Length: 492
Image 1 (cartoon, rainbow, N blue to C red):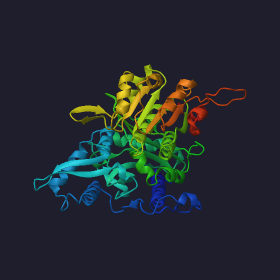
Image 2 (tube, rainbow, N blue to C red; image 1 turned 90 degrees about the vertical axis):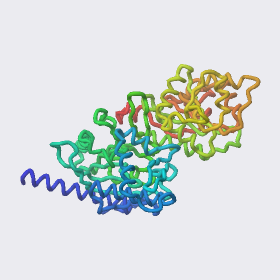
Image 3 (cartoon, rainbow, N blue to C red; image 1 turned 60 degrees about the horizontal axis):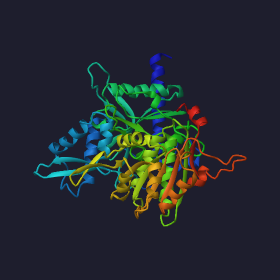
Image 4 (cartoon, helix red, strand yellow; image 1 turned 120 degrees about the vertical axis):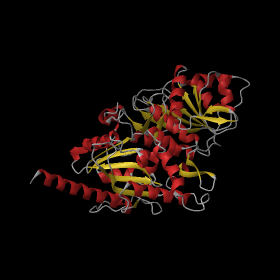
């Protein structure tokens, strides 16, 4: 068999693999599978819809144009004209980095809009994305394959993308498939080449997640720039019950590509890192997602009428990215309707500024103008007077402070705890949380919910008579990711 025949045969196998993947995520039934659990993956209301006729960039734009019109019929009396839609295209084409795309998709207060002038002179805002519509409402989920992409750079080849997942008509997740399990890095390199060739531009500017997939090995990563592409930041998925790596592509699809999970991964579980001169897009690792989910579910069940809510603790080893995990948890919790304020508590005053700086960099809303002044959803506390003021302020922001300032504040005779639903997220929960001072702090904030994050929890070891066990202070273990698992994953 000649080399060209071998390549053609391999290509045919990849197309068959792609067909199985499409069948799985659109119908919920995998060809040839007897695994009933794996086939029960998508709710009836929101399935991925395979748009087999969409094969070109122009067809993608036309599809997005139609969805944009259908979602904005309260504003638009008729479909967008060519001149009107050209303004929309220009906004998307001007997204030069994945970070800018992430900002665009998040929008303001979770609603992404495009601002255009209609032919009749009206100035309007058209909604593209609404974060509250994840897996709900009129959100449209589509799959396209084999999109033809003409060369963007002279002398380079035309390209054809394997599988693309669209949300509301925009490419959000790109999947490149290889039939040989040993070629996972080849799939990653292929996507790196697309970035270098400027193929992830125009309507593909909105891509958030890249997935390299073989039948028995899958890695995913955040979209990035050519100079920052690093396959070390391509992660494998893990089973939530065991933290064991997921190898089968069907199992990965079952965990990652379902609705609303895929949508959440590309929105709720992305980090817009706005660090000055190092802006980038980051996607959470599986154990970070599971921990965040566990805390949010516990917060949703909290009864703020009780004297205290010890929701539990997260045990994640040092170096596993607790800052990102705790920020995402704090940020998402602060958006829950039953929560008034989230207070992130560090164990040393010296860490307050460092944590505040990281949190502000990760905040997708950045500075917001309110009554003529700019404020951040994330704020620090330079002293106890500032802490007192911020605890009383309106709004659902995140306060970063130290346990020492909190303890000092509640000891002041004239301090009165605001009548709010507080969620306290305590970093390094094994230190500075024992003893009567912290106990009195918890008692002072009546009805508050408490969550601890630690890399080294205090256990009830044989002969241990300490009353400062992590579970006694915060409640039961919510999620664990230990040093043994981290070393096995090569994550630390």
